[in-house]
Length: 175
Image 1 (cartoon, rainbow, N blue to C red):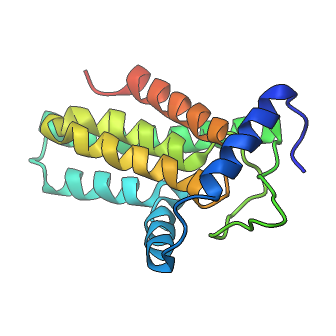
Image 2: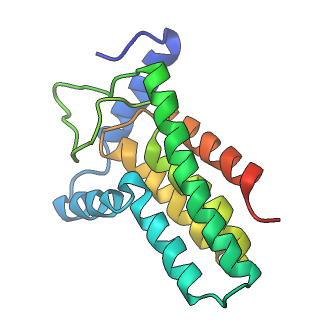
């Protein structure tokens, strides 16, 4: 069981159970969400977007600089996330009757790395692709929400990760 975080943990567990007990009737949807979520492992999809964006942008352009900076921001956010995970040491949620629906790379839960890297990248890459900003934040939100849906993060893990990623992205993004 996760470390005691008091009444907040009970609320978190209740919300997670509610999320896990609904919307899982179609195995194809569950597989699709799990597959999508796996592309966010270690920020992989966001590093790929930054690399492609930088490669397709004109040499010396502000857009290229913003993509390169976004790659660095995503990496830094991932590192910060891991440092917080090591400090907090919150275990992933466990429900005997509702096993996780996707594998994980660590037993540590707080904050969600998917949410952290996704919101850091969306914030950073929005400077390079301002018209795509709603799509970037939509993808970040979908990555974040996929984690409690799949039973591998508490809702507060996702909220904390989104906050950490957004803060990191805003503090360091291109101006």
